[in-house]
Length: 177
Image (tube, helix red, strand yellow):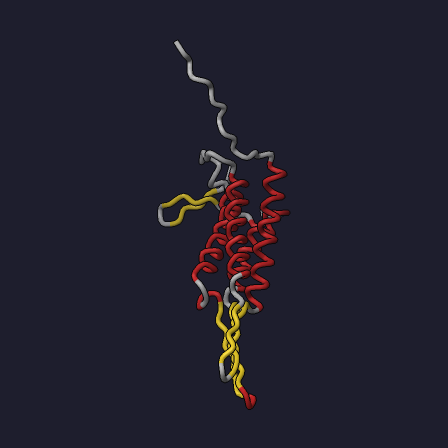
């Protein structure tokens, strides 16, 4: 039986941090780490001109492209699913697929978005008086690695859970009569 606490009239399951072990630790911790990394520089722009003139600027994930924000939210959802599952809040919920598969899909989608945006983020323009370059910064590199690691550990959870991919129901030929 799970311990519960009442907050403002609502019954809430208590969470025991010691339950977060193995792969779950890396998924939930990765989500927290991604949130922290979102405040590092994710995108940089630099310019150079003849005579040593030029400059640069960078922005964190929150000031960069919108798809990275979507990927971050998906990664946070993957971490939240793990914590909610460990709290037992999903015990009575009937899903058409296993919760570890949901976690794998959500974290995999976050990694895919980060990776696709990363591959299209490099840009360079040569102008008559100099050059302007735009490229991912340290936060994006680290964020991509953390997201890929979360997906890997979500895969390991799925594999060890015994859950299976949903299969298409076998169709029966129509009865002629």
